[in-house]
Amino acid sequence: MSVTTIERLKLAYRRLRVGANLHRNDALGALFRAWAYTHATQLTGDYYEFGVYRGNSLAHAWLCYRHHRRHLERSARLPYRRQGTVSAFLTQRPRFYGFDTFAGMPDNLEGEDSLAGGSFLASRAQAQARCAAVGLKAPDLQLVQGLFADSAAAIGHTHAAIVHVDCDLYSSANDALTLIAPRLVQGSVLLCDDYDLFRADNQQGERRALQQCADHFGIAFEPWFAYGAASRAFLCHVPTPASAAQP
Image 1 (cartoon, one colour):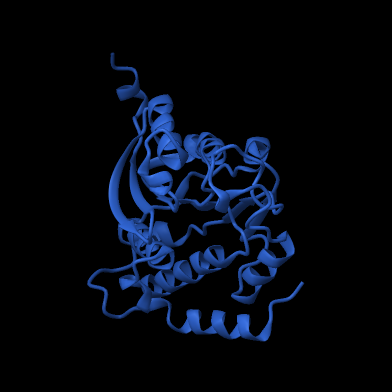
Image 2 (cartoon, rainbow, N blue to C red):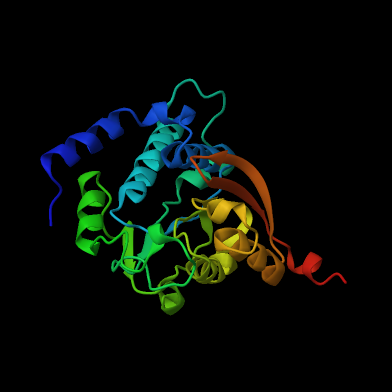
């Protein structure tokens, strides 16, 4: 399945204008800011997205990564040499993982009509074509089809630099966070696209899942910034083995 001419034009425009996304207060702006942070701090690691839908944010994450990498590689205005930690950082190339059932929302009892089973349906081929249109293809891209709880074998061995959770439901978010928590390191970025859904009820949705993840794994999620209608970004503070052993 290929993307339409209009979709290609939109993606081409995004590629040309990717640098303007720093001041956007939506998911595209959040992704731009997250990749800026990883390059400023030389945080290596892969990109994980749970809830791919048509592949828009996955494709944009790739464009943001390429923008910041080119700036770090080529800009003559940077006041330092590309050696040491910067040189080591540039030898690393992240892989982009996208997890989705590609069958729409699973059947659920979370009580929102807009999140009914089967909604947000898009095929894997649609997402793959949209990513390919901006140059994101295998092996850089790994699309994983299936329930998150059944996808542990697809998680890479490298730690996660940025994790984008866009799956609305508590059950899905809980499975995603449980899956990825062992790959989080100090400073990893977590983007929760639906954190304040369900009227910001701490007992529902991504809020509940994130609190349970913090309790179970001992990870502190520091609020970083809000974006969009109901979204939050967090920085991860992961306990070291020594600190985890403290009573």
